[in-house]
Image (spheres, rainbow over the protein chains, first blue to last red):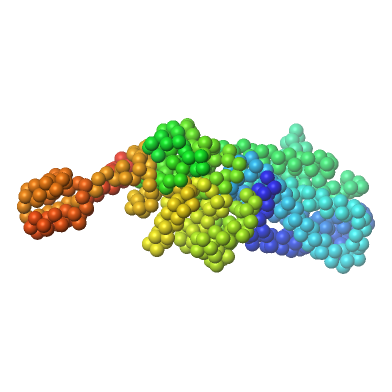
Length: 279
Length: 317
């Protein structure tokens, strides 16, 4: 089992993805965190619906602004994590390496388990690169906006840890998707499409259905935002002016929801893989 | 293989029993049974689309049999404790990540069995691509891929080798190399080799036993000498009846065929010398197809055995 994990990790480090993905993670993390910082720290104010000006740093405190800025790129981050997870399995089918892989690891349950572990490790490492990039990009804008860079170090560390966890869970969801849909292009299309398009549209649609209005908080993107727990200690009404969901899940539950998605998809994939003919 | 010789305790044999695979309404492999004796080279022959690859894939646990079983050393592939150390397989459709070097491809497989990099480099030397294997696999020629596939199969130093159309895509020099390599593996290292091919000539000089399938079913099996039958030559002379008497007196079996004589149990040299000694100028003298060649041609050329892959597109080859 350990040797299978080692083989999976070696697969990752022997392709270009091993440096291009962390690089993309760090750069995009930095850019989008800086963009978030541009609005919340550099410009530092925006009009509320009633016409008065909201100054985030005053309304929520500098620690919340720092949290929001450093996690400002998280949507990009979990999309890339999703892609990493998808590639782990569908890449084997795309390049027909699955035959050699299954000859080396014919017990498919073990192979899936080894891949789950390796995806978690790989995404965690990428998530660290992503966090470093986000902090660099975010810190520049916080400094320009003359706000504290690390107002609540322990709280920020917890936020970073949660962000890394969220990315790992998205990686596992992607892995499940890649096992489920072996065509790499289709899997990427479905994964990114559902996240960027279907989920927001469905969420919007659900707001018109009274009985289901609450359901959207269980969607992966919304649950991810809840899992980051960005608005800890902030009045719920005020948090909504910054885009927090109404009646959002607590971060613990949100994490479990994401874990649930990942587990269901990986299990489905596991069952399918065990029976699938590889020709 | 046809003889029910018990596998020698040192070697690992292959048993296929009642093996059947259907894809929808298409029967790729139909109640196939045969044994591969340990330490021997067995040719697994049949026209394209006969079900050879599907059979090999079932042996390797890649495809689930609809019925029957395919065992290596009495076990299913997935039940082998360290599969790559028991069986090495080089399958046709095996791919390589275009951005990963061939050497790293092997290192990935080696990691799964705790095999050191030293062994990887040894094998790259053995198959003759130590330098090229450090380049990305995307640019590899077919010959490189075959050699790399072979190196992958040998990584765990297995007792049994399954080679699927190993000569495909190789140039004549590569084919010669491959033949010599297979002989080396079987004769000097005592490995059990099952090698598939749709061309009899490709493996005829290398294999000891033959399993021929067509349409997913067993067509013939036996040692190659059994299946070849007696060698025969065709000889044409001005007076065939007179030469026939001479040859019969020399103890040869002679039958009229195609305006000449078919002489069994003798090679061209012996018949030519006999004709010369008796004063018959020879107009034509050539070896006839062996029984095996004729059987194989029949199988490949008859319309009912045409390549089923092309007709259905459901089976791998």
